Image (cartoon, rainbow, N blue to C red; front, side, top):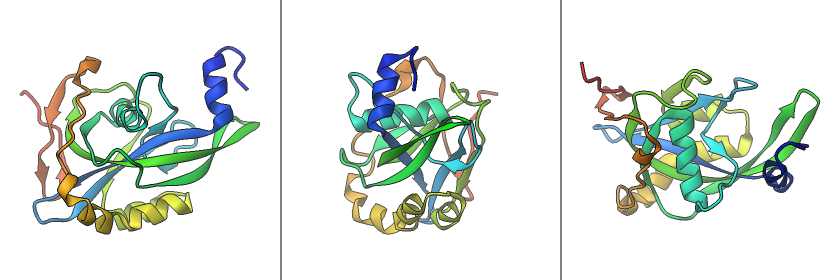
Length: 187
C-alpha cells in the first residue's frame, strides 16, 4: 500500500478519515458552505483527511479545512454530525474504502494564502446546490439536512473557537457580502 510511510499505511488500512462541512450564516439567515475539488479526480468534496497524532478528531478535521481551503473558525460540537463512505484512489490501479466522520465548522476567517491553494478549486454555495455537486449519496444527504441541523445546534455556534493561526499563515477577516465570501485585503 505505502511501503515508504508505515504510519500512513496503517491509517489507510483502517480507512477512517475526518472532515468538516465549512459554513457561514449570511445576514439574511441563509447558509453558505464550501466545497473544494479533490486533487486527483477533481470531483467536489469537503475538506477531509487522515487522523493526526496528538489531535482530537474534530481538531484534525479543522486542520484539514485550513490546509485545503484556508478556513478557520469554530467547530460546532465535539461529536460528528454524521459520516459517509467513499472510495479513495491511491493510484490508478488501487482504491481503498474509506469512512469519513463529519463535523461542522462555522467559518470565521480565511487565510490570504494556504498550503493547497494552487491544487484545488473552491466554491461557496447553498446546501441544496452542494448536495447536487458531490458524488457520495450519504454526503449529499448530510448537505441537504444541514439547514435543519444548524438550526438545532444554533446555541453551540461560535462558542468553541479553534485557533489555527499558529500554522504560520496570515489570516484575514471574511466578510459576507450578498451571501458571498471574500478575502479582505490589506491594500
